[in-house]
Length: 146
Image 1 (cartoon, one colour):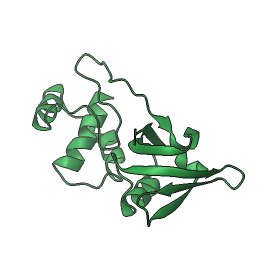
Image 2: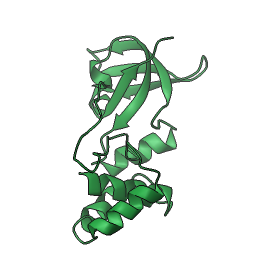
Image 3: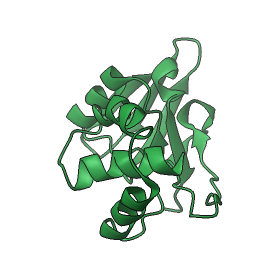
């Protein structure tokens, strides 16, 4: 896991790949690079704690940081920030990137229409985005005190 997530971050931060294209590349590379190269990437990146999708990167002993995030589909009305996103669907990542729904982005969940399967997210007082519950299951958020 550490190797994969460091490779993803290296590809995004150093090689300027889009976050939607790094999962498959990391899948291939994680099996062929040496521990020495992984350690050097870790050093070059400043010993990061999270990959580009917000997933925690285990330290050299395999310990992961605590994760208190919940899926957006589970969230109640309130203000949140995106903590991490599922990285297995490049179309989802492209959609999020195009709409600037990135790690750290803040928004307010104003309405949760379960019957229709739609969430209403307010990013500014003028911008409201509707999001389906299926997509919301792939976004992990943390509550922000207003």
